[in-house]
Length: 468
Image (cartoon, one colour):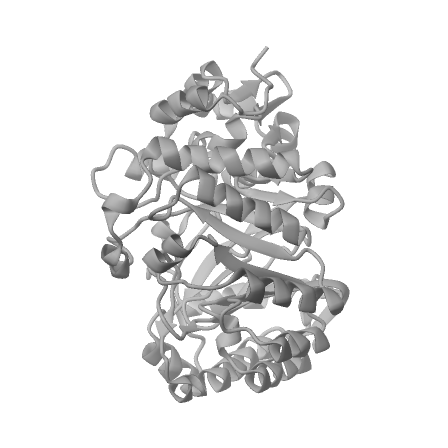
């Protein structure tokens, strides 16, 4: 019988970390984004959209990327455009509206959405009027289902009550606030200074409009963090009554995001302290009654994420964990990623190229990847592990007509050391993470990733962030 205790012995978990912490994917997709290439382009997207249109009545998920920020946060790994001058960013909403037209024209029979997510960048960089203009146009082309999840990411430093009011008037019901850490020295180190007061005021404003699933983002592993100060931040989030919290591992990837070189590496918590920061946060959220969701989220027991986890219908895509299933995801905006009919497609990353494509009336696709061979089967298996910490062998065997144990014989051999470490359990019916193994769920998923095995494992070059 494997250890079923919640991870409270930090010495023991530090030993596990020393053995199993490594670079690896986050599995917001499979194959992961490092497999994307120019071999998949605009013509492929046209074919995918035509196929998606043949499923009338099936709702879509839509992601809209609003990349602008007034200033750069040094911890940020997102694709952003820094522009203190908002007049320079004003044409972007017009480009988005034209892309909405281009996509909707190709989906005449598929205009319902069950999920809309505004991400960034900083979506609330756009003024209340610009947001309303964009959303009015979007909803003139696509209609939300009655139970649709309409979500937005907000930076409390630049979000006004008027913007929250406008979003609510368009039916938005989910909101996520970036906090990272309330400690002044940490905020100064990462160039992200914000007060508890402005965050709490916006949370309360959202509540008055009936927003639910109100989320707060935290990050562990940042410069100058300590157990004592980060615990104070966690306690404040709990006191705020956040419905959900995400506690992300800081991904230090200066080879991808050059601005991270401005961080003082000597100020980073070491590996053991970094792990202890997450272990502490997990303990505090669990003690406050929150339910662990996936590898780094927590939700109140009556929150829809927690309910979906209990009912084993939790979903995960590039926007994070969700409860609304949508087979196809449309990405709109510079660098946005879509997941359509067995292919991932990504828009052009350079704003000028994106704008030229839109003005020429062309779908702005730069690269992507098509699922091949066992990709679809392995994608579902990894998705089940990442969402539900468990995969039923019969589910995979029956869906794909395979003998599970023989098909995944090599993968199960690779999983064996994690079973020996008490991170996973295998029996005749299923594979599951133990409670402590939930913190290493990426490691479990990597055992089933043939791209990792064949192309990336053991390479010296830096590609992925650390798994914990």
